[in-house]
Length: 101
Image (cartoon, rainbow, N blue to C red; front, side):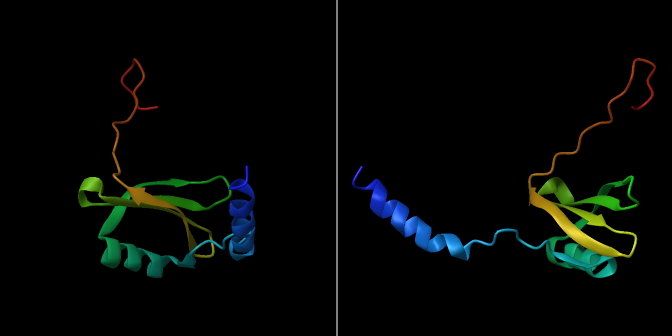
């Protein structure tokens, strides 16, 4: 129990350094696309239109080494939603009739 108190004290010293809510990384859509293409060699692999008019786009590098998901608002501002490694494409799910869901 003696070790817990000093560790807690040190942890509380760093607590104010952690932002309560991090601001999303956003920019003009064309600039974001250029950055994803040039810096990460990522290209669009999927997209969808949200009910609020925003465009959700998934980008992946060749072979899926890296991936990024952005959301673009109708005014052209794109914000990073998520990014990671090892993108795995999947086949469309089909119904018994053979039509995609």
